[in-house]
Amino acid sequence: MISVEQAKKILSENSEKGQIIEKSLGECLGLILAEDIYSPIDVPSFDNSAMDGYAMNFEETNRSWEVSNTIQAGDTSEINIAPGKAARIFTGAKIPKGTNTVIPQELIETIEEGQISYSGDKISTGSNVRLKGSQSKKNSLILEKGQVLGAGQIGLLASVGVAQVKVFSPPKVGFIVTGNELKEPGTPLKDGEIYNSNGPMLEALLKESCVRKIKSYKAEDDKDSLQKIIDLALSENDILLLSGGISVGDYDFVKECLNTAKVKELFYKIKQRPGKPMFAGKKDKKLILALPGNPASVHSCFIQYVRPSINFWLGKTAVWEADHNLEISEDIPKKTGFTHFMKGKKNGDKVELLKGQQSFNLQAFATAECLLELPAENSVVTAGTKVKVYDL
Ligand SMILES: Nc1nc2c(c(=O)[nH]1)N[C@H]1C(S)=C(S)[C@@H](COP(=O)(O)OP(=O)(O)OC[C@H]3O[C@@H](n4cnc5c(N)ncnc54)[C@H](O)[C@@H]3O)O[C@H]1N2
Ligand code: MOO
Image 1 (cartoon, rainbow, N blue to C red):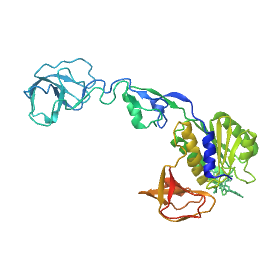
Image 2 (tube, rainbow, N blue to C red):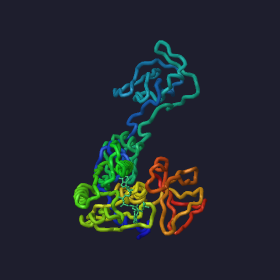
Image 3 (cartoon, rainbow, N blue to C red):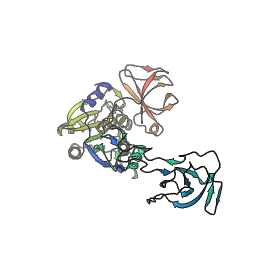
Image 4 (spheres, rainbow, N blue to C red):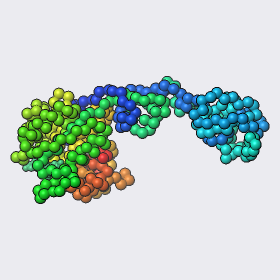
């Protein structure tokens, strides 16, 4: 049995990176940029009004103007405003030639018969004009390679007119849930049967990890049919996950079938709880991770091993590191020699343990915010000790 650190090292040495491909903005959420992006245009690409109001040359000493034009957002015509004149203008509309300032309509003092005036002190030359290039200058670097594309970055790219960017293509991931006892939610249960919670949970975890091409398979605890499904799933995916059937029971065939499928073992069994009998293997460039069937094992092993492997594939950095180092708020007894991953909740700069940590118990998942890592060597981790914390 190897340690958590050894398992992560082996996986980090065997992780693959996705291919660089062009994707449209709508497909980029959560993906990593594989190129630097320079703005192809100035944004704004023309001086425009920040307010609904009136545009004029504010250098003119007489603070009264005749309104000669109306300019709407989207109006592309070249308009020239003569001295002593102003234009009615709306937010986002192009500032006409001959003007340099916009006075919001609520600050205008008199508006009658096409004549406006202003004598206040809130406005100065240039007020309420968004200058060309003030967001992004043409050819300037706006996003760097390695950037995670969230809503803000996608909005910025759209604003400069970029429709497609190079990103690391996410992997195709398949998962096989195994077990005769499994029934799908929504169908009645007989005594001895349980609902398949690992399947929907894995699918959700994969979606949270930006994987979009997901295939799910289901296998009975029967060697021949499991073998067929493993062979098919291996041919259809870049990463294959399995749930259950990896321990030492008479009906645990996953390891044997993976062996028959010529999957090379990277490790089997980690000194951890939950998830001790986890298996990792490779076939060519495909990564195979068999997660012990208890729901807590599936969840914890996903956060510790599957998510970082996917993140590395996506081009993220520091994927094997914990998100925080936080003090625990109480003494936590544990089994020496095993790293424990436990569900917790952040409370200010401390982290609290949740009740219901048993490996079959899913209730605590619903309130958990993070996993705490309790070191293998301790028999108790005392209150105030800083531990590694992984966000869920
Ligand atoms: N004699 C020993 N028995 C066990 C050991 C051991 O070392 N010696 N290890 C235990 C540990 S630790 C774990 S973890 C489990 C892992 O077993 P498997 O990976 O073979 O998983 P299964 O036996 O198929 O299932 C375990 C448990 O999880 C439930 N399960 C399975 N699939 C699902 C699903 N899709 N949704 C919800 N729940 C699921 C299943 O009904 C079992 O209760 O082995 C221990 N045994
Ligand atoms: O390794 Mo297991 O502790 O029952 O999840």
